[in-house]
Image (cartoon, rainbow, N blue to C red):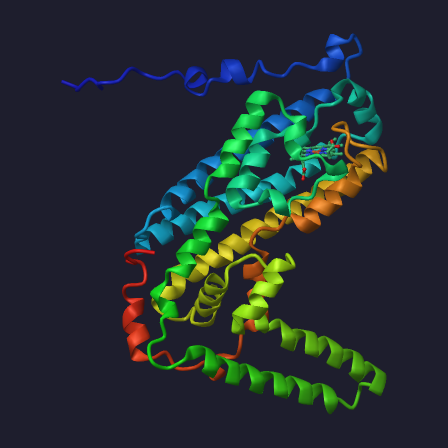
Length: 368
Ligand code: HEM
């Protein structure tokens, strides 16, 4: 006798709520008696985006849940990496589906564009929540005309986005996690003295290469040396807390000095098996950041093609505004910039035994 299942059978349409979803495409051009064929695509593509944004937020909330704990186990880091990998794959789709939208021509869009005013992707609450939860702070946002993005939202939506602004973001939690790694505790020997020595030697070799390059004219050499000196000075952000603070004050760096040093150590000693997952984590954060920037640039290319130099339906300067946000709205760029400070494996200071032992307890950090 077959055993009956304790739960009722499901019907595909109901389980997926298709009745609601598939009846949620209301063409405004129809309503005003001027049906525009391409408006269906326009609506569906935005709805698909919003569904993917929902999934990204779901993964982000899970990441925030992992990193808000005081003790982070190795398996947590592995789980966080998988969550980020999922976000990354979704982001690739988000960029790709712009091609589908581009089968709509600018003239097709003009058939219904004016009906949309002042609605715009600019009012996407989920997009703002993603930005906030990743760590785009109010002071780092580009605002046009001196108004912030809340102004375009209704009261309820303003509350939702403000709530997401007030939580610790992924950037904040990653920073705290990096700061409390015992990895920074280098025991009696000073890693940073040895590292500085290796950097000085590496840079001395680079300078020598420029000075002795027979293919460069004197003017070219001078230009190269100016660039070289900028690179040399940039090491201050890891080697001197004073210089680091100066850059933070100037708005050129965001990650704390301690977290910056910890992230660099993870990148330098990534071959240590225990650092494999933390290294993956930092790499995936860079990927997420880059893919959002890539989406922003891809969106602005599509927008320029679609509306030229017209203003947006949301009232911004259109492409000009969007180019600025693509440039400015990076969140983990400090981590990607750390590659400047990598030195060859052969020059890496040997890990003291004490630190290697500590690494075994890397994820079981008690207290902050
Ligand atoms: C015909 C297609 C599209 C055009 C012409 C267009 C145009 C624009 C313009 C001009 C803006 C700046 C704000 C404004 O003045 O309205 C904007 C912002 C935005 N759009 Fe689009 N867009 C299109 C499609 C999409 C799609 C499919 C999405 C997916 C959700 C989207 C998401 C966004 C987001 C999130 C913003 C805010 C960006 C920010 O503030 O950094 N847009 N769009």
